[in-house]
Length: 403
Image 1 (spheres, rainbow, N blue to C red):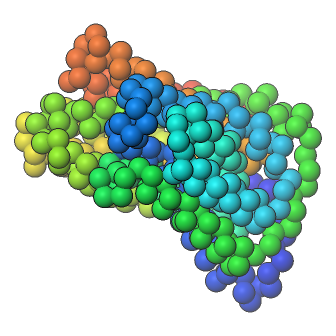
Image 2: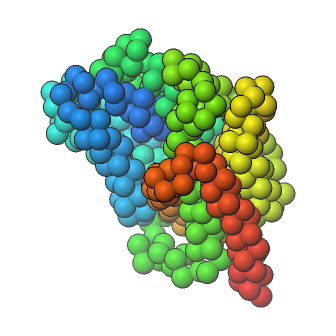
């Protein structure tokens, strides 16, 4: 975090209670992040059951995923800029209450239109939480530990992104899709109460005009980092979107076991979140390049060794660790590249991540159509290599900015 950001917020807690209370607040932010981002990704695993229950096609149900992602992408930066001056504790509690209500509405939805509304409302709030939670975690921890604090919040975000789909698959079997949304509603409300009780009240951030916040968009170095995030997430989701199909069709994993393989991919990958937080402080661009190279190796190797389940497990572990490490690495890198308006910078990264997610799914689908499923991992690896090379260009932009 920049010193300018730290200076804008003064914590009300006394120095004697600051460390323990703020550490618990960061933990609660991480758990809240898991609940919030799980709400976005879990629906992929619920699509078959809700399409049957509502009497709609799977492709129509799939538009709920597109609705959520594109709402995050388009509305996130504007809403975060508008709400950047709100006191953080109050903002987080309100966001979690919105998620509680929206998930309850989804659980009770009689048709696709009400369910669409229930998905639209939290999609507006998610990027605001994502951007401001990262910034707030860094402020709570202080400049020296800001990278690790952001990584702790991203442990919840990363966990939701890599475990949301397998959790949805398993939950739809155990509780049905309505029961799953009721559970998310209860968890959202619980986290709202806990944050209200535990989180220290932070000084209200100074109100910065939209034009002043948007000034970061004139900085080539910042824009280079944003574009780098798009390339990284495109590489990740070109392959990850179709990982379940790859496991079933290429590796020959029985359909009933695919969910558990995805779960294992996510659990092993969470170690990457810790690694990302540990190493990002040593140079965000360098660490991005290294993680992208490891990601390329893991994605390509998964297809290459698919015939051996033992080696497949090793390749998936390499892929999963690099994949999850890149979540906090990209967030810290983009936020540190911004001279001001860190909350807006963080949310822009979220929006561009969603752009990369959508673009990756499109590229992967096109590769399957024209080259076959077995080629997806190799194409994704090529995009990851492009990301590693692009870090050199961004580094030049940084040198020019410093000069």
